[in-house]
Length: 301
Image (cartoon, rainbow, N blue to C red):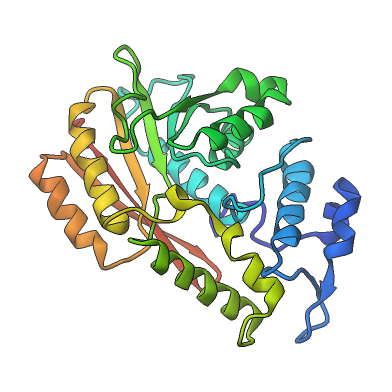
């Protein structure tokens, strides 16, 4: 994990229970080393873990998402935020003068609104959080309205057209230092369900799935969160095409890329649209390697 990620040493279950006592009922012993853990295939346990982390580490007192909506892994999400901070730190000061309030657009914020919450708490960034799903926007607004500082720093906007990404969200007079996105990875509902089944099997190391696990398959996200026609390659390709239109209103466009094989194709698309600077940033969480691609139409040397 990033050197500044406060979760790199693992979870402090004592502190988590102190922050959120109800979390204690989800703690179990790891059968391999007798250490405290949770059943990561249990959506209620993961949700309780997230609330405990937000309470203990990020001063968030209220956070709740509906059943069936994506429940993000906070350590990995905040890693993206830390690496984005590094990206800004290496950007010439002439483009980001000292004490400049950093403004970020989160594309597809989801009901959890997790990136804006973490970015505000860790770096005092300001966010516009967009989504095509009205329920996600409603729930995200409920979360941020419960906290005065979040309410002042995060504004949610419904994307009225699911064929667009920036169009309909970025106003004519606005400027953002960053856009961030965790795109829908899969190209169909069937592929998304198969991916969820595989994830639960890997977590459980057991097959077949139990009936209780079958019922929780949808907890991993709604349609717009998990899949779109063409999958992440098509989605990010569309994002790159639209980014050209807003090239003067955004310093750095960024997006997570789940499949390493997509990077070369995305770089070709970026060259087609004359991006002046392209950067791929790898992030490691344990044995897992994730990455995001960043591009800019500004002269960055």
